Image (tube, rainbow, N blue to C red):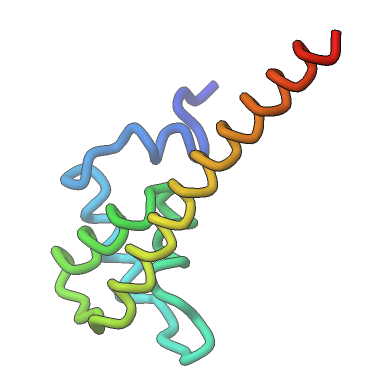
Length: 100
């Protein structure tokens, strides 16, 4: 039985371990205008948005400033949603305590 299968194995890989696979994937990536290379890379190698941008650039992919800004904005929005979710949970718990 194989160990470290699936996404968990990919998450544990460092960039140097992932690089040969990434280069192979990149060579076979169909560069359609409908496909977002950052999103496809993230899903394929189970990395976060900014790591995907960094690794693609290290692999020689030219990303536009708009693509990079889009990913940074998405990360910021996600962080803000986590903060809001935590704040709302605290409010809900406080209301429940006051009602009892």
